[in-house]
Length: 141
Image (tube, rainbow, N blue to C red; front, side):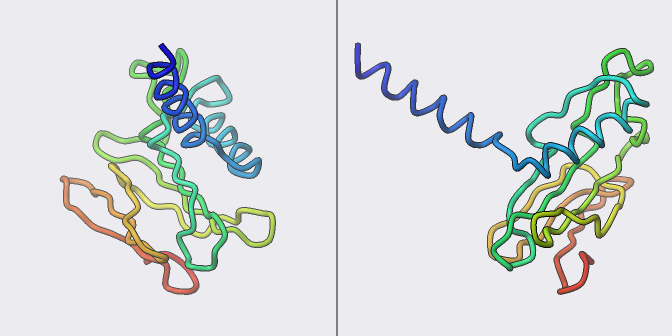
């Protein structure tokens, strides 16, 4: 019986920590959901929030992808107001001190961060064209 409980407890601990966010990230996620849902309520899938070091300075930065936001009672589809037919707004924030500062907003979908200290951020654009951006010391391009 204990053998079954230990792996389950470990799995639950990993799931909880994977979704743990800083207070600054939680605030910005809540702000983006409110804007996406025209002040209404909504949720975001964990895949739509990437909080990790993206600039190589050792501090956790943030990406919020609107494609992962679902609005409660918001329109026909319940999607973010910042989504079109193929892509949605993607917001990039860089940590400066204790604050996360916005540095870029662009359209994309399927956002993922690759490995490394300064990872490539991959996504698709209109028409499904794959592309990526990377921190250049000042912004993502």
